[in-house]
Image (tube, rainbow, N blue to C red; front, side):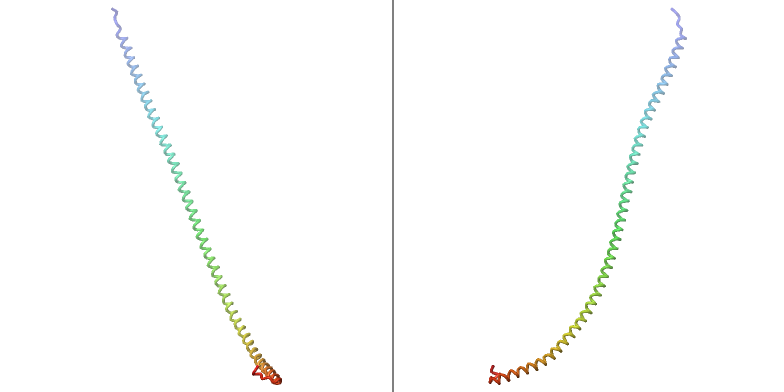
Length: 168
């Protein structure tokens, strides 16, 4: 039998073990690195989701803030419009009161003139009527004299004809 060479075999076995250990270490490092890469990818995906969520929330917040500002702006415009309307209404009321006051003063003034004219016309009418009455009274006296004279004349004529004026 041939003698075995134990030294060579041992050397080869140790190198294989060292090689296997080194390969195992490399594989282990590779698995760890791959695991870390997967973890980092998941972490990155989570961060992207969080970033997207934050961005969406931020946009939603901006949208709500813009809507609030728009609503506040509308409220401000509404308040300004209402204040302007109130001022316009107050001014219109004041002008109306002024016009009504002027109309009342004019009516009072015209009523005073009407009353004065009425009094003046009443005086004129009474004076005219008094003059007419005095003229009528004067005329009545003349008419009565003339009527009496005519009456007497007609009575005389009737008597001349032999008639009694009291019988007729």
